[in-house]
Image: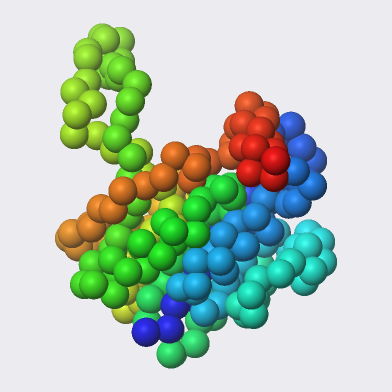
Length: 233
């Protein structure tokens, strides 16, 4: 099975307080997209990486990834769409027919351990057609719908992470079925497992990793700096 990883990197850096796209923001002197791509390559389970990028910043992404040591893994850039779903669909359409397994990963989860990448690929190869890494919810939760506060049982809830792994044919079918939603930010899917679940496909859950948190705010960025500093020391 040939494995391709779609690395979504077309998001803005507004919530990080940066004018640059989020994936070009440096952490410990290296851009988030390069950290994420290195993690995929270091897993030894990925044959190629397709990075979705904003059109206006494509040269900057090419420069950053062109100088990264990715252990011989092929990297291709694809201009992203109006939504994350549209960006993944554009990357998926460009994959060769020899790709059997597709990972979809967020560049914002730049510290994801290579071992988690390998675990997801192994789960797909073991028969899971849509594989999702998850962590238990540790915070207390309430439902505030209709202006009423109701406690929520967190014991059955999980936080969804990436990379998510898929049988290629299933992911193609899921995106084709939901293509009418891709251009509208309000309707578009925020992850690919939900598109597969909408087809009635059962999801296979594997344990996630605390280091695979999503870098969204300035606080997240500071935490990532500290973690990488600890690794370097």
